[in-house]
Length: 184
Image (cartoon, rainbow, N blue to C red; front, side):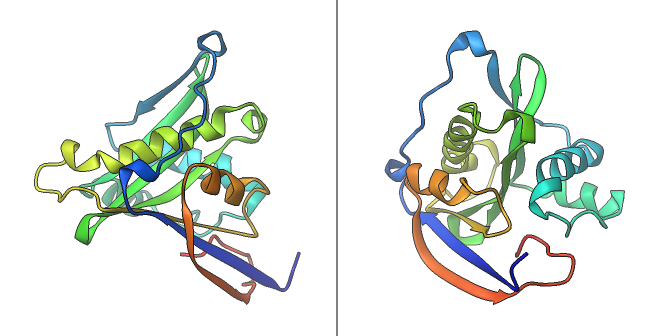
């Protein structure tokens, strides 16, 4: 493992920035569903299953109550991709002040990587970030969607964000922390 971690910050500033990936063939049985009932156990499962091999550790210490409080915040949404009924990955949206939505977490379980699901899930999740205000009374319309990824994430993450129309606006390189965690 490197002694440093490089983090790239990317954004879209208009819904028209989104360059959608192709939709998987219906025969593949891929569908994306919002988890509308906040479930700490489900979110922890997705977080740990997707992040196990890419050093996501910061939320592993969260007690159930912290997960519940986070998931109940207005504008936090979890969208899950399923392939023939099996969870394949997820995208977590976190609405922030000023019409900003962060793609807080995005990824696939290892067995589903490289099968065309990731680009579709990112496209779908980004579109849901752009129309998020319509699902949450009192939220301002989205004016910016942002995400960060780093050298600890999967090797195709940065390229996938760029292909979906995200533009780089900042890069930071910092010393790697012990027990490397996804930077906030």
